[in-house]
Image 1: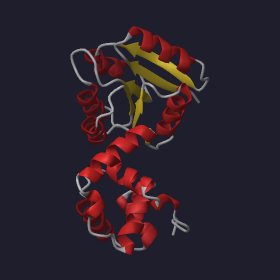
Image 2 (image 1 turned 90 degrees about the vertical axis):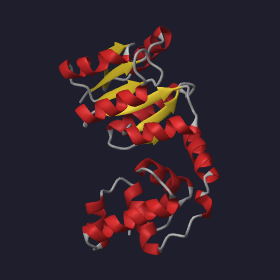
Image 3 (image 1 turned 60 degrees about the vertical axis):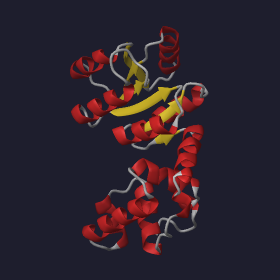
Length: 216
């Protein structure tokens, strides 16, 4: 099974390099390579694409706004941001836009490929450096001093961080969907998180995903 990838990158050398890297991966096919963000939506209407590899800095429209448009119009298409920007504000906006991943352009090609496969497989991928930047920003905002989570809230957080939906969490823990959603809201409020990406990063970096018996 092949995966169709659309590259959106305004630097010709980078774009050509990405094409060569992806074309060397047999399951991956480059459906197109665009430089102008305004061309993307029209292209997606006429071409089946599984993932968009997207820069933030583009002519006419930024990659974050474009990600939101893609997710609104084509929710099944995955978006992986590939950029030089590593400021917390950009990373947070990308997470809120619905993108599945964020990788820096100075990353090894092996990491870029790994990120693509992870996202195509239904997961998310934020590179280590990106994760550290976001966590540092969150700590500066005081998230390390928040009220402690209850045992049940930790269980709910771990399941949410490992890609379970609220309904699946409820089924797994033998609680109602309403109760699971209440726990989710309490977790987000206590940790002052705005989205699931922040929750997942927090759970990963603080060792919750490595706890023995975390599958419950």
